[in-house]
Image (cartoon, rainbow, N blue to C red; front, side, top):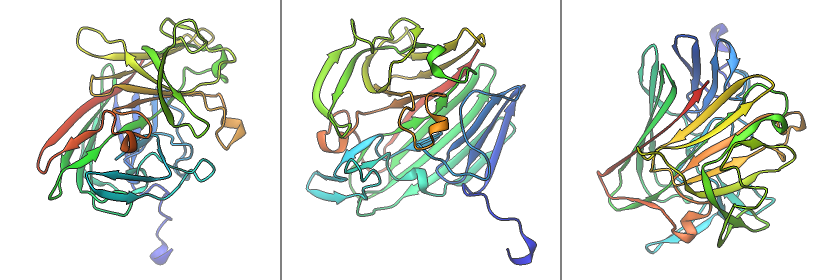
Length: 311
């Protein structure tokens, strides 16, 4: 490197925040949650400073979460074609901002906020301004997103997040899982919704009460989330072998939840070692179905929060 400078990390600048025994690292590339620990113990299964995010680890999924069939859609007369970054299934996946550099807005001891202007491209010919704040509190990590329409016309939008949470055991099979969802979306061979929604009751996908994951393989889109009096839905992963637990909570802007036990990640050593619990505002393929899409008019802002509570 010129002038003896150290090589830049694959995910750019690294911002560390802390609160008590908690520490989190957020990266410039993608505003990605690279790590989150309590007392040096992992709460999320992230990646090292010399690596880049694989299998979506800790990434922000916008302006659409999950899959977009054929990468193509038409919205209000505008035709778009995104790159097929899941070519084996013919899908565009997890949006665009996870690979973009984000600009630092504010960095304090326990909080960091980042900004990303999303300009028109062939895959998303609209304009948005995104802001994400990661804040460590006494009860864990809170993530707040604000998105503002920034173009001359309305823009369709959806967002999701992709943390792999861990309760400390080597395999998720021994862990107990709670998913606050009473229905699931039926997916086809390309992992796209067929339009059919089925109850989870009476099936191996029913985790509305905590129970061991065992051999169940999850790559499942869930909805009809059960919520408390404040509109918060809570998913939990606990492991009796370690005595640890992790809760992923989400406000009522997140109407869908993807749960993935990592059975198909490229690195076989990482399979079934953590559970991706992914809050989403809309279902997979929402740019084509238009189901629960957010529509942002110029200058109008939208905000939502979710977080992780280790215990």
